[in-house]
Length: 141
Image (cartoon, rainbow, N blue to C red; front, side, top):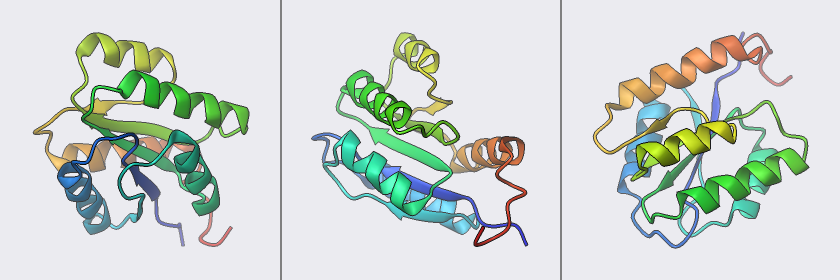
């Protein structure tokens, strides 16, 4: 039996709006994924610690504050420093196209803007997971 995809939905920084993050978390759960929700006002350090402790496959950040470059950038630095290179980092929020391109160069996966159908996010994560080598791991492995 293959294990479920494990996703950390994170709300870094001072942004206090989490409705979108909760909608995405519910959609991922409904799609059969295990979801850990970080709660509001998390630091990149706390999110990396959670990701490692929870052994997640995906870190999905929701950022509406405009601090996406700093927050994604710091998260990627911390993951690299800890040798975590097999986790998909994705997310969404209010992120201009030119910043999306810069984040892609840092290793961040696809980013989703407001109004994206949740099925598109589910499909993206499932497709990544199927090609990641993690899909064949047994539950509890």
